[in-house]
Image: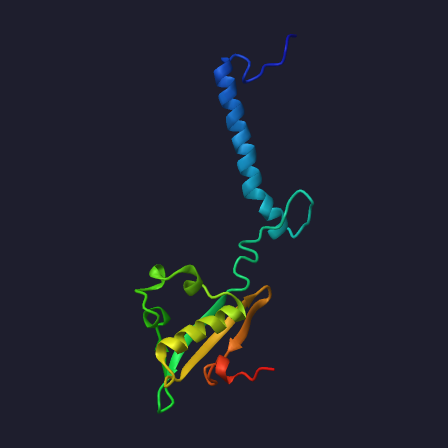
Length: 154
């Protein structure tokens, strides 16, 4: 009878390695492409296949803020905070100015803008904080932001 015929039996060792690499590539690529379907489409759980989550928690703590100047007639005019602070745009500003982190960062950004605008400016802020369950409102432009001089200390 003889030995069973193998496709790779008559190949040179370098050709067998090429076939082995190709087979390993196909298996790994198949796993990468099809394993998310096991969880996402079929709704099954396994300790070998983790659910696919994109950017989980990467933006938590960042503040999305819009600054306005309130005119005497009550209208709100958008304020470019980078130009007000003397930067050409976000790319020329340092990281601590470009990205506002947390309520303390929002307070510092608001204070810097208020100082740059002077005491006569009516600065308003609309801000929200990125949390694990969504956006949390921090400030409303219908109220002026609180300044350090407005706080009553102990």
